[in-house]
Image (cartoon, rainbow, N blue to C red; front, side, top):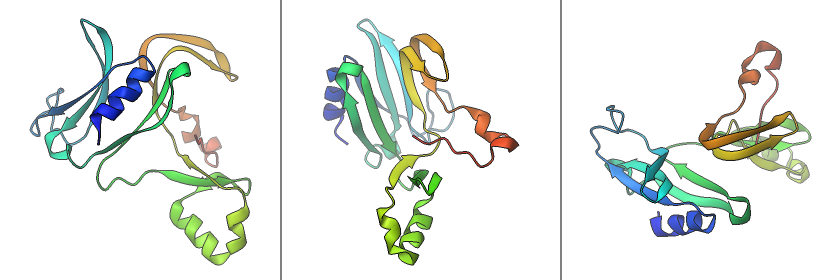
Length: 168
């Protein structure tokens, strides 16, 4: 992981980034530091993103900037712990709710023509951080004056939505 490269990507979109190693014994909430955390902090220069990493994960954590659009102040930060398996779905018009990678491989083995069905790899139930104006056709524009973690809607957890998946 190259912290300087990540810092420069944040700077391109007008934000600051810091990475901080924390004790293996306790994190900032007083519990065992088994995971990483992304938070918004403030100092005399203003707000900045802080990635806290337990010391035991410092050399093992995979962190990179997947996408950056500075004019739109958009950055997609990828963080994965060793052994994590992402909840990815292969999606096409014949499988609009997506199928897991193992099922995709099996389908291609059984039907090689399926490789030409226009597949896309998408993440199930993603979460992001946002501030500013949020526009969407399903709701009125909202203004978030400070950073918020945005999670997927829970409507898919109802029985009537059991066969619906939200993908991004």
